[in-house]
Image (tube, rainbow, N blue to C red; front, side, top):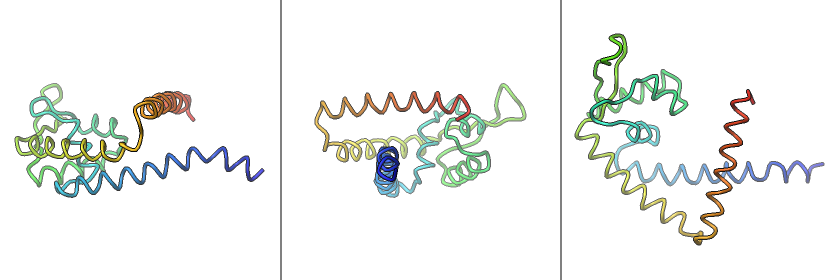
Length: 150
């Protein structure tokens, strides 16, 4: 029974370990830009004109509203984003990138891409393609499972 349980949970544990290692690598990259991984995730979703509502950011990133508010507050203090009135809803605000935020995001994105390429270089092209296919299949399955209330 223990062996069966171990083989069942092994892929989960490996994915979890990979997540931890990838996240640590990301934190190291973003630290050089004075960003957390959560702050970077917000910056990636923004533009400097339309922006996004806090509720949309919260839903896209699966953060609760208080968490997204704290992240945006910090980004705003660093002058990387600003809040503007939502033209479609006077009660709501949108968050947009500032020019400084756009520059910092572009530099962080370039460094992140380079870091990811280095970290994943251990895989050859075939292995890379197989991994992408398996992860895509798993992602679809997980989304279906969660949509079913799982």
